Length: 193
Image (cartoon, rainbow, N blue to C red):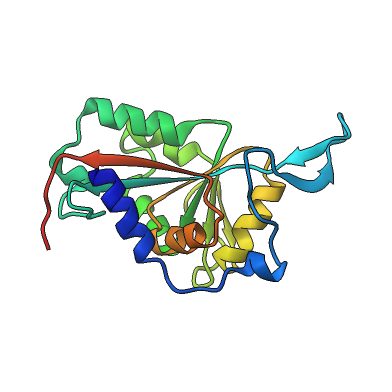
């Protein structure tokens, strides 16, 4: 299928990186019940790790960006669905530096009410190039490598983590086995090379 080809393309472009889990630095993610090793105060059972979901937008031929947002296929239903997805109260959004800068330009405070959920959402930006204070509301900087930050965030976060864009970062996380879910939205467009 086209989505399968896109995921294969996404995976094959992952940077060559050693699997640190094999060296004992990270616990392998196997199955849906993964414990952080710490106990919940209420139950005494190991606390489950937060899930890390990556949203991918692609065209039929596997491209993830175009000259126009949503390849010109933006409509009220898509805007509403994206606002609901990013505005969920029980999640934290995770961005790399480039996607943070891009999304900050897309979601100016107060200008468009459809961006209010995104502006209000908790956001973590993984970057060693950005500096505090971040200008976008509810944004926190994690100034470390994503392969170190995401396992820590998954262990510490009481809510699921969701990332959109940040292709290089998420490609490395996928290769390291740190992505729990991929949500792929395929747009009926052929971009070409």
